[in-house]
Length: 155
Image 1 (cartoon, rainbow, N blue to C red):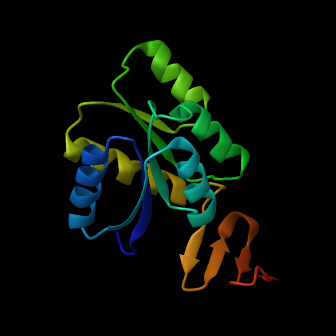
Image 2 (tube, rainbow, N blue to C red; image 1 turned 135 degrees about the vertical axis):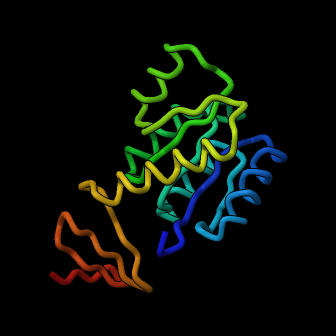
């Protein structure tokens, strides 16, 4: 990966969240942000506009599926990978129907999670919702739009 990608990890298990963040930061491909609740995760997703979100299903305030729905309703278009111990087909369907792009069951191997992250990022870069950050600018190829820090559009 040429440019570091911003990832948001939303999980109420502090040990797991920190461990995932440390492991992903060690690859030097990612800049990491973290949130411990669904509502703080939604707020961070809207504010940061990360390149990808890892979102736990079982959160203390709102569940991850509802957090995912709220993110999508607020135009968060980046890939969202749901993380959960619930591994039935119905759980997977509910997560994907809520707007998630992928669903990974716990426990998982970091190498597998990393491969899924990279696959989602590659796919998203070629999608309609792709947004590239270039310094203080955002480039939205599908709209042929370049937006500066003051939200002024050129194109």
